[in-house]
Image (cartoon, rainbow, N blue to C red):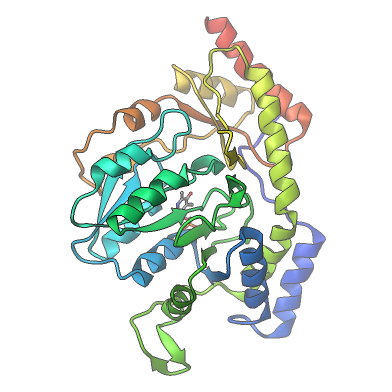
Length: 360
Ligand SMILES: Cc1ncc(COP(=O)(O)O)c(C=O)c1O
């Protein structure tokens, strides 16, 4: 049996939606972008959504919209994908790394507090693997110090914190539609959500050459637009998101039952959270041997992420983050996508259990 780590879903409805755009002759800034933005904002429970070209450009434009730049500091986790931190560098700002909560793997609010300096301007909590961050203490610290909060929701489409969707928990939130995500646009794409009228207006200018009219450019902008084809695919995918997330949760519950008592440390779901399992990540000693064993049995796994951001050659940071540095050698992502069959999940679960029991 071959079991993929993640898989995209393409049906006839998606193909028809793409063909309809191709035949329409309208490829940018058209009705699909507008429709997708409205539908995505409604899903998140926010007022505005602004479609952009990727999750990375979503973070870059969000920082630009908040006037973050030269000499500013932005607090981020290091246990994340690099693009949480790199956009700040483009603007002359410095990413400052905080360690993670040992249970959820999300940025530790107490660690955030310790990293605040007079130069701090923003915090970017990442809802890693689909589990929301503990936003109340983060927003409280931000409020006390006059900082902006940008949710990196690139892995948490549809997750909730105390009953509210990620994307509605801070000043701005950034989503990615990269193909492995809980929903995709079959290519690169992103979305920024916000409840602020002024920020939404500025983001719309920033993504489109800073213009207010066709050839009137009021601020320094970029081309970070989301195409009509991608927006049309996104609308189709968004319709499936609720039941796909339910299926991801059912798969996680099945893995939890299969792996209980094996010694593997399993993902947690806080009582205030609704996890959407972008990734199902376990922790084990001897992770690399387990990964090889699974590979021999046709099971694809991943490591999210094998080098913490502060340890990347690009970053040259000598900060010590004990939990992040420990977890990096223990984490293993098991196959997780809504189209996995129970049989496949059982096959993966049995293989992991067998390896761990043999070794014990
Ligand atoms: C946590 C996180 N932040 C940022 C990004 C960047 O998104 P994109 O790949 O769409 O640029 C991703 C996705 O790859 C991500 O997982």
